[in-house]
Length: 571
Image 1 (cartoon, helix red, strand yellow):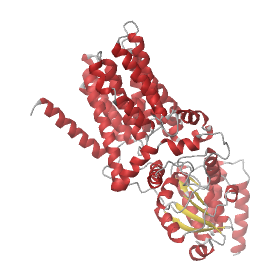
Image 2 (image 1 turned 135 degrees about the vertical axis):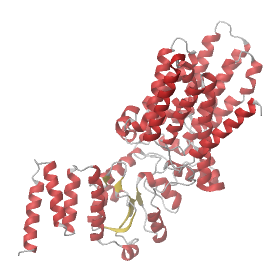
Image 3 (image 1 turned 180 degrees about the horizontal axis):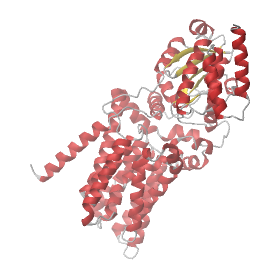
């Protein structure tokens, strides 16, 4: 076998291994609303101008009619959504898993090959491993998957175009660049990053050629500028994108992971869970510091720009990994220290394997963290609309029960509705249920992210106007006592005392993670009193008194509890 055949065989072997390791379960809730929209587009041969999936949104934000977010979200991703739906229609969720695995495997393999060409085998393996571990920490079954692919291909194309000095050598790429930008602009808003990268290379080309601006250079510059203009041909439009970027509410951004700043997210999620990004950003900064004067100006703009935007928002982290070949080429590696660097590098990779880990491979389906039992209950009993739902479940619910519209889904079309969702789940204000004439509510009793019980579960259990009708693995269904729900309630109502035991179990889970949570201790004691568990209530109140000794409530509650115990057991 020739050396070229050996390299091809090795690349295919690496690709195959990476494909298997990246074939883990679908975990991104956004995938489902993209799938739903793709199906709607396919069935109607049109892009929606009004939201077909939620009863709270029509074609604009009712709180801020001048906001362009609703139309932007409805129209921006149409081509990606059709791709997802086409794969799903052809092979179900398994084909979508395979699509993601192919793109991830290609990107990791391509980063490895490109970095090896620019640097050496060890640095190439290290940077490819960093990207692999990063992909293991994120969900990526959404249009950003294509932005990852296009961003990498764009840099490759620009490197080929601007490194050639003759028109003939660059000509094969002249059609690829505008075609890539046109497709990208109709798949994901990340094409704005592509515009910035192209402009950086165009500026550098102009500066490098200003003394000898020949015909090939002029054509290259015209190609780049034309490719920057092409993306305006998408239904959402560039102006809508800019409006979306600068008008999003801060209260929404602060609660959505992808929109959080890197420093805020690392404080929230910890250093270990973000180790691949921390290492990648540190190495990018080192390459900028030690090779600043030697860097090609286009590489300086690209690396520094991507490093900067990666610090601004979590959603931009991945793009820094995709220029790892450029970073690798500028990192110094003193020959006498090669062994030390090699050992240190693989020590880092070993740490990530132990702490970050890898996801279970060969799972060609969605993960099991969805309320399938509750969905089947709603499908079979058909309670009255409108339905309040847990935000991360919105897309999945609309996919599984298309005959219903829901309160909200992962698009967050109207940020004010997200605020109302949070208020309803986590405070004791039920006014939103009446404001939106909500008759059915489906949500979890416990947040595994925060490790806390949702107060809404307690409020509805006590509220005589509502009835619990379904309890599943961390999922609840409550129905308002209306004429449309009366038959379902008569047949399926769960006794209040049984609901109290469900809540006590949930508070036990919460107190394992937050043992000194005063409100949880007091609420648990109140519920235990309702079911006659006086020793348990007394224990919770004693703990609450230790946590907050200045409060008189635990003392008074224990006094009343002791009096009631004496009345019930006078002897």
